[in-house]
Image (tube, rainbow, N blue to C red; front, side):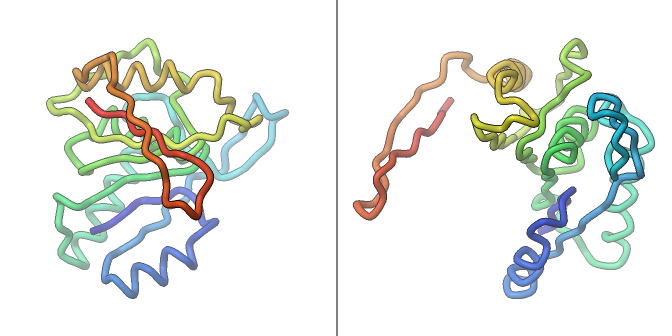
Length: 179
């Protein structure tokens, strides 16, 4: 199993779990990028255009490089990212759905590609995690992003929602969305 993660925030924890459970974790880093919407701030980032580009080529090359050194189980290859890395995760799901088994974006969503209406030869398993109080990558667009993914995958647009109580030690409940 391998996961591509675009953040180093939890790398030590991931590394210790990977060592213990015998899987590979890769932390590719995007090039220095100027973010005009953030006052011209420069930071490592990804070209999240929704279409194949040099960053998608780079991430595919990372997979091939790791596969040349280790034998990867391509049925258990996952792509995930945080913030701009989450945006790039959507790009990978849209352009490289044949490479990864599933995808997960944390506080990142497509910003330039809603008009592209990507489809795939298969439904793309996708987990989106986003806090409603996120004041940086705003939550307001998340319902549209989720609807687009549901439509793209040909899933039932009216989900069955079930609420499950957590064990008695917790005071909250968990909601699950099922097809």
